[in-house]
Image (cartoon, rainbow, N blue to C red; front, top):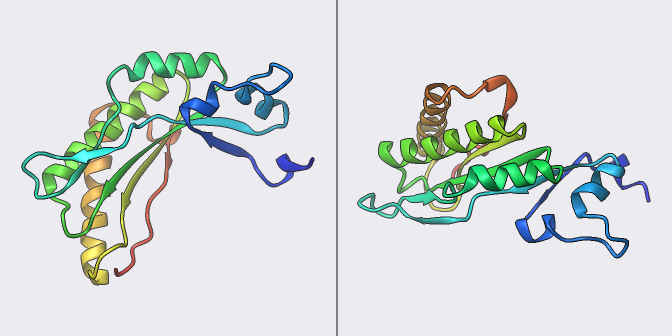
Length: 168
């Protein structure tokens, strides 16, 4: 009782998004009935980006358009994709590669009427200083916005979820 007074949206994993309550209502429909917007995490995790010294790439673009169409049909209001960067391993190429994946994801979301949450997260783990964290964040966010513009994403229709710029 009163959940919607404090919560306006929930991010569900694919398994939970497809589950139903005891009365047969799906989680997304039940959330909407409470006035809570249902969202879905659509990336499938990270793997090392070949040739980039430990930098990571977030995966999940294969079949994403069809998955988003299904999520939209079942009531998804928004989706989330997280690209992860470590201060010590980010490279211009890894920033562009992850920015490109985020842009493709965002464009697909908008094509299906789903608001994309784009998350270029520079991790605070490590022993880096504030200047190195700022440099990495500028690189990640700059590459992301270059790719979003190139992909024709409506920037007024995204939610940016940036990291805090902090020393390790």
